[in-house]
Amino acid sequence: MGVPLLDLSRQYDYLKDDLNAAVCRVMAHCGYILGPEVKELEQAIAELCNVGHARGVASGTDALLLALKAAGICPGDEVITTNFSFFATAGVVSRLGAKPVFVDIEPDTYNIDPNLIEQAITAKTKAIVPVHLFGQCADMDPINEIASRHGLKVIEDAAQAIGSEYKGKQAGSMSDFGCFSFYPSKNLGAAGDGGIVVCDDKEYDDLVDILRLHGSKPKYYHRIVGYNSRLATLQAAVLLVKLPYLDGWSRKRIEHAGIYNEAFADLDTVRTPVVKEYTTFHIYNQYTIAVPERDKVQQFLRERGIGNEIYYPVPFHMQDCFSDLGYAADDFPVTRKAAAEVLSIPVYPEMTESEQQEVIAAVREAVAAVAV
Ligand SMILES: *Cc1c(COP(=O)(O)O)cnc(C)c1O
Image 1 (spheres, rainbow, N blue to C red):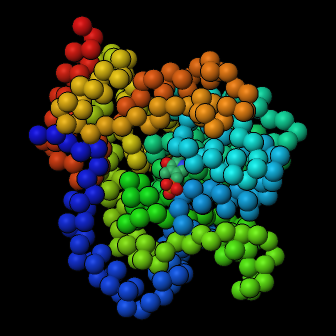
Image 2 (cartoon, rainbow, N blue to C red):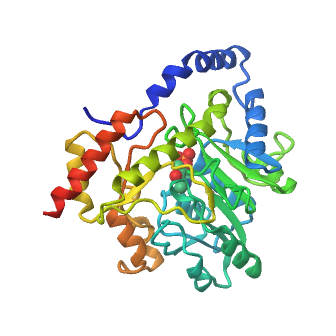
Image 3 (cartoon, rainbow, N blue to C red):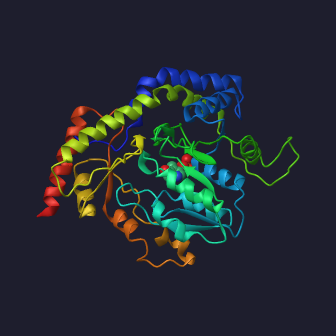
C-alpha cells in the first residue's frame, strides 16, 4: 500500500469548510498585511507559550534572524549552537556577519550537549541558540545557568517544538526569545511560509516589531536598517483555524510514538527516541529512530513505499558553506554518528492504525534483511 511521511490533504479534508471560509474573509476585508488575524494569532500564541509578547514574521528562519538581531548580535560576534539541526539555525548567524560556533550533541536526545558549551565560549561569544530537535526540548536549565554566568543571551530555536514542555515550562518561554516556524510540515503548519518570535521583554518585542517593518517607527522614519518580514494575514487566518487542534494532534503523535516504541522494543538494532525525565511533553514533530546500515534500511523502506527522511544527513561542520570555520571532518563524533544512523518515519496524527502496522512490519523486515 505505502504510507506517506506526512499527508496534509487529510487535515484539509476535515478542516476544508473552516479554512476556506477563513481565507475568504481575509480576501474580502483586504487587510492583507498585519491584518486583525495576525494580532489575534499573536495573542493566542503568546498565551499558549505563557509569555508576554509574540510577533508574526515571514518564516521560522526570519524569526531566528530577527531575534538574533534584536538580541544585539553584530558582525564579529560568536554564537554557540548545536552542530545538528536544520540549516537555518546556523545560517542566520552567518547572515548577520557573526560566526557560528558548533557544539556536539547528546547521543540520546540529539540536542546540544550542555557539558560541552562552556569550553566553546570565548571573549567574543554573545549568545547560545539551543534547538529543541524533533519536538523535545534541549536541557535548558544548565544552558541558562551557563549563559547567565557568562552574560550571554539565549535564543530558543523552537521551530519543531510548539507546545513542547520542559519541566512543565513551554518551549520558547525559557530564554530571551523563542522562535517558531509555521512551515507546513511543523505541528502547527500554515499554507506557506510563516513564523513567530515570542518573548517576555517589552523592549525586545518592540525591537522585533520594528525590525519586521524595515526598522521604521513611525512609518518612513528609520532608526535602524530592518527587514521586510511579516506573517501574511492569510496565513494567520489559516493558523487560527488549526490552532485549537494542535494539542490533540500532538497527543495523537505521542500515541503513535508509544505504539512504535512497544513494537520495536525487542529489536537491539532499532534505537527508539529517548524521552528525558525533564521532558513533560514531547510533541514528536518527528519520530526518529537510529539504525545501523541506515542507508540500506532507507532503501528497503522506499521500495515498500514507506515515507521516511534523514534529518539531517550532513552536520553543520561538514557543510561546504562553513568550510572556512576551520573544523576538521572528524570533529564532533556524536553528531557524525547520528547523521549516519537517524531515520524519521511517519508519525503524523491522521495516520491510521493499519498504516502504522504497515510501517512497523516494513521496519522490522528491513532491519532483519540488512542484518544478514
Ligand atoms: C523548520 C525549521 C527552521 C526554519 O523554519 P522555516 O519556517 O522553514 O524558515 C529553523 N530551525 C529548525 C530546527 C527547523 O526545523
